[in-house]
Length: 135
Image (cartoon, rainbow, N blue to C red):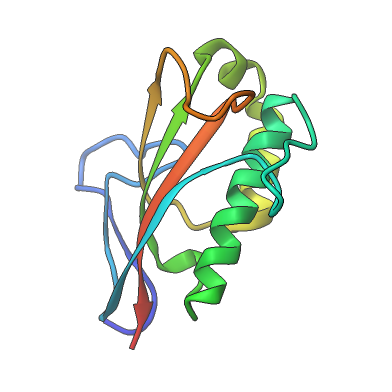
């Protein structure tokens, strides 16, 4: 299969917007990334803005992916937890820009879940990811 993820969108299904229905990852070692919130390496939130926290959470994932010797296009699944669906929807234009900046045109299988609260005080979004470190 090579070193790129293979996107699976069954024929006849409407193409999903912003995610894939399924992803087959290249051969490699599994990579599991814990839920990342939008704080910096010193565990400080630099912004209370939803989109800024989303970008920082993705940057934190990118840092872990690269430290493991992998790439963002080797992520097969992401789960995004948000404290406010409304804030998420209102931030979509900026989220799309930040997503493409860090993920390019790679869209893993994704789930978005609204929760009553996140563990870290001040966190508005938490993202966990699963991928591979390709052989």
